[in-house]
View 1 (tube, rainbow, N blue to C red):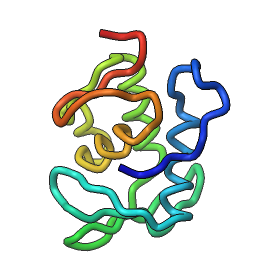
View 2: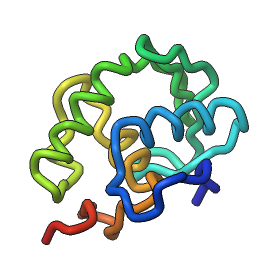
View 3: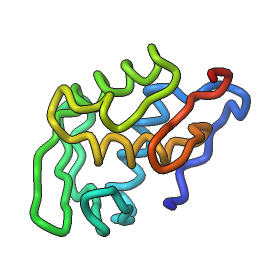
View 4: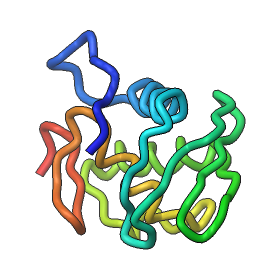
Length: 119
């Protein structure tokens, strides 16, 4: 688990801004994290609003920040999410799931994530 940047509003539900801050934090620190498809993953470049460069044990891949945002919006709409819910856009569900699991306030386990106040 990666130490996320501190949140100012502790009681506020996680937001897209929290995801953006986490992506910037992961890139700035170079901290690695695990997904179901790769033990070591990191964000080596991050262009806010544009794209990020995801490095995995098998190579690198550019991921559109708009795709991450679309997946986050799906999570917000559903309040609960499984990795299979994140297949589109971008076909990068393992990364999306692992990223969202690190957002402060998101809870869950290996197969399911929840936003606060949802069941």
